Image (cartoon, rainbow, N blue to C red; front, top):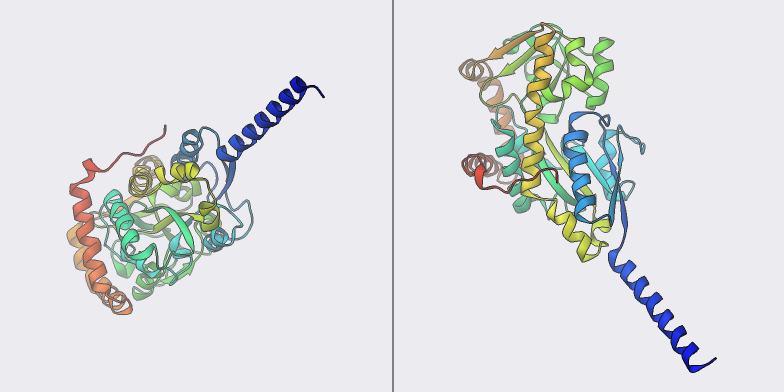
Length: 352
């Protein structure tokens, strides 16, 4: 081999090595995102797809997010958080209350008549997560976002105006605390993930359900029951959510790709997610209005008079069951007030 040929060969080898190193630095990653709702429902379209699209754009294509709706990867909704921990999925969106008692601090935002505004509550939840939950209850998973939905309410076959109207009804409850409330008013709480609600209503397995307006459209609830009870002021209840990532997958990302995930995580994303869910309540409510359904609106004054005697013991028992339980309640209320007043100064998260 001539000196010139040897030089060209060495140059080619060096170029190939450099290209290989560059590819390793770019590190192409595919993330499997798994969740329980149909792909066309509000949260997948308006929250999860926005997040996934932003991650793909911000990474300039290095990160691809494969979206699996309606439990397409198998299992049941209560198994989602363990799927993230065990690596069955790389990212999951789930209702924290699907695993009751496992993440108890989140329940401070699920107490009845606790939350008035989903954005402020999602902001407070994000801040309390960083302070109290990140290295404790959620230490086995990397959390991308924490939020609550809009006001939870009753959707029933028979009208519900006061607590006594629920006596004897079989009602799907969305969380441990909702089920506690239903029991105290003489209803029979039925536990089931939200995708099962439509069939349960159509077959008469349940007489009603507790969900926010926004999910009623995808589940055809206004076509299955004709009575809806909403509350002015603080909501009957709210559920907490997390968008969670396998910790090993996150830790294994390059610094460049971690920065992309981090930029699409935290407070701004959480407020966006909670606010987006709450904003979807209006159009879904209009469906029930257009169908001529009976919408009962309970005033804040009437709700307080009728429900406080039932709700107050739930607060007392929850506070007693938690270390510094009352302090957590007080902190959540203070943070929601502060977040509400400072909402204009929180960074905006949106589709890019």
